Image (cartoon, rainbow, N blue to C red):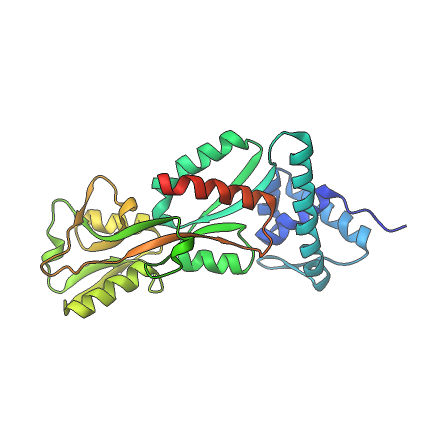
Length: 285
């Protein structure tokens, strides 16, 4: 008789595959690391195959583990959808959601609060990072879905919201008048970094990228110090800083679109439900 795959064991296995460490997987599913290790051994014994290789940095899936992962995700999607449909208790499970750092403070509280009101049994794991990092996570299936920024001339049909990029400075310093212009920018492959450099180059304005940070908190700290100006989406500008109007020697900047991307071609029911929620709410924020 073939062994029956236990849902709890599969959920633990997927958590390990996602986090690549037993400790983080234990935290995600609310068990001790020792319990997680025992569950892995039980699953390996049931299948009579090694599923994980321990490494100095965590764990890696074996060939059998990689094969099981696709099956495990599909089984859990169907299981969670069936439970939610038949119990009438709403969706249950864990959702991995990515959001660009500059939208987190402005959008996330309302998005998460309103979704939790409808689906209180869903645990949402939020990853805030620049769009290129989120896209890399989606490609590795480490995220179920993410909001990502796209160029102004991107797929207009898929855009949930448009946000202008703006120059941002300290209210009490005239950093925009310095020569060369001192900039605080995010990673070179992000849309805001590219737009700032392209527009300044086209305008013939000398500039220097004096500060760099992959997080918006780092960029805001530099701008608050008065040492440089930054480029942010308008929604990300805090009240204590000012938007610097283009004109004179500051060129105009483009807008960016905000679109949804899934980690899988056939996303799980949780991801579809959260995407529908985002499509309803993001344009109104």
